[in-house]
Length: 225
Image (cartoon, rainbow, N blue to C red):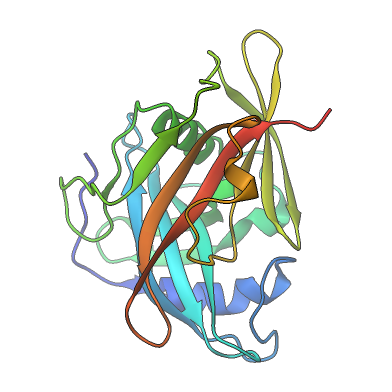
């Protein structure tokens, strides 16, 4: 399991996000004065132990109304080969591990694979800030449709309504793994229609005005035909 080092990152994660978020098509805060604040999250382990995986939730009150975003991040000790320029959030000096390349995890094949494994019940979520501690509040929900075998991510599209990761199954089936970037605190709805949804994940986070919310952060469903 991942070890959480009690140290510093320079620049810090929120500093990196303040520079990177305004360029995202799904960002709903103020592009001129972004103000991300940590509001929760969790981690998934890389079985190889090479890539740090964090699903960070940030509140931002810089716009017309407070909003909450999901920002999955990966941390690497060298650049991710073939990554799109916009996938790099930035670089930072870690107090223990040295220079780290920080990526939008939606574009990182290690996070993609681990998120699919989580939705299939094969990866246990871990606490965001404590080593070797599962987080039972992060839950994968299956549906009657079931999950096909051999799921592989094949492409990523960022849009105003979130991020879609194209997925292909071993039998040639096409699915979409949607990351909910603007968190709304809803657990079910059209996105979890059992006729088309294979699995979805829910988690908790802190609200901008205080209190807690719970809702969808990822949905795996059949691709539109």
